[in-house]
Image (cartoon, rainbow, N blue to C red; front, side, top):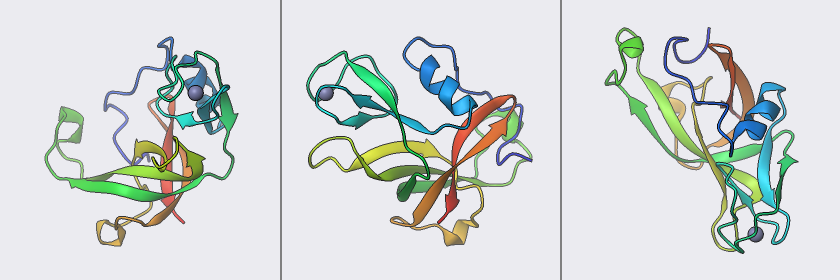
Length: 146
Ligand SMILES: [Zn+2]
């Protein structure tokens, strides 16, 4: 069973700026977009580098990615009908280790769920590791306690 219900709306995987990234994720390859000219990473994938304004980029594999909880919340209010009878769940911002988004800006960040943690386990700075979770036919980037 997935961390969240299958009938919760899923992200679009066919948009021009992110389709290539979703294709890698569908194949269980965790990748982060990297600028070919200045080398910084960014998420979500975008056509233009915020640092040097280059349009040149590629998807860099980041196997065995780890990070830390940058921030999180526990959601009690059902924001969608699919969550009406669902237990409270966490939503976290993860800051990757060793994948910088530019000088002084820290690691690239992802939004997801810590799918193996109790609410009382969570804290800002908690180490996590990347995993994949299939929900409703889409592979999602998710996180486990490290
Ligand atoms: Zn750049």
